[in-house]
Length: 403
Ligand SMILES: Nc1nc2c(ncn2[C@@H]2O[C@H](COP(=O)(O)OP(=O)(O)OP(=O)(O)O)[C@@H](O)[C@H]2O)c(=O)[nH]1
Image (spheres, rainbow, N blue to C red):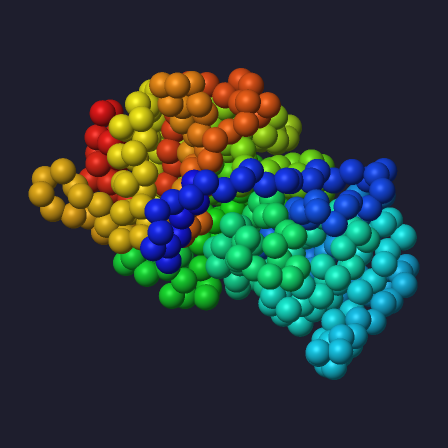
C-alpha cells in the first residue's frame, strides 16, 4: 500500500520494486532494471566531498555515478571528460560535466541537483550501476528523498531510479554543538532555519560520524548518544576521512527492508552495524524510548502480533498523524505533531511481515517478501522521528497497538 496526502483514491497495491544490487562484474543492467540511488547529506564541512573523493579514487569494483555540486579538488583525477549536450537544453554543456574514471565510476558535476540534471544522467544508463547524490551542506534530505521514493509517476529518467537510502555525514567536532543549537527552536515548524543539522540526521538511514580522529572518546560517545536520541533507527559508523566499507552505505535497501535494529526485539543495533574502535569507551546509556528534547526527537513503540482490525487502526492512526499533523490523545483532545520520518516492522496474525516506511506525509506499508523475512521477529516496533512526539502521542499509539 502506498499513500500520500494528495491521494483522493483508496489505497492501491504497489508492486514490489525491482531493485538491483551493485554487481561490479556484470554486464550493464538491462533497461528494465532500476538504478539504486543513495542521497548523501551532512552539514557544511562534515566531510561529504572527502567521502565521495574516496569513492571516486579507490578500487572497489563498483560502477557508481556520483553527482556532486562541483568537482573541487577531484578534478585532477585521471579521467576522460564528456560533455553533455541536449537539443532541448543548449546550456547543458555549460552546467554539467561528466568524468569517466579509471576505477569505473562516473562522476557528474552539476550546478544543482534538480530533476533535469538527473534525467540527463539517466541518458547514460548502462554506464553505471548505482547513483550517489551529494546534497549541499544546507539541504534537508526529506524533499529530495520524497522525490525519488515512490516516484512511479515521474516520466523520463526518474522512474528508472529506486531510492536505496539516505546517508548523513556528521562532523564529530561540531556535530553536538550543531544539534544543541537546533533545539533553540521548539515549535513544530521544520526547516525554518537552513542551519539545522537535526532534520538531516532525522531523515537519514545511515549516519557517518566523521572526523572521529579529531575528538576525544567522551565527546564522540556523547555525540553518538545524541544522534541516537534523534534517530534511533539509523546505524552509526565512526569514520576518518570517510573511510567506510561501501556495503554499509550502498545497497542497503533502506526503503524496502526493516531497519537493521528492528531485526532484534529489544531494538538495539546489531554489533555488526555499530562500529566500535579501541578508543570507544561506551559509558553512554542506550536511548530511552522517548527522548524529551526541544526540537526533533524520536519515539519508539513496540507491539505484539497485530490483528487485521489493529492493522487497519494503525493505518488510520499513521495517516492522521502524517497528513493532519495531529492525533487524538485519548482524553477527548488532540495533540499536534510533525513526523519527518517513520519506520516500522510488524507481523499480522496471518504471519505476514510488514514494513512501514514514511518520509514526511508520504508513507508505505508493504509486505516483506518471504525471502527477506528470515530472522525477522514476530514482535514489532514503530519508530517516529519528528517534533511534538510527547507522552500523549506515545500513549495514543500504544493504545492502537494494544487492541
Ligand atoms: N582530520 C580529518 N579531516 C577531515 C576528515 N574528513 C574531512 N576532513 C577535512 O575537512 C575539510 C572539509 O571536508 P569536506 O569533505 O570538504 O566537507 P564537505 O562536507 O564536503 O564540505 P561542504 O562541501 O563545504 O559542505 C577538508 O579539509 C577535509 O580534508 C576526517 O575524518 N578527519
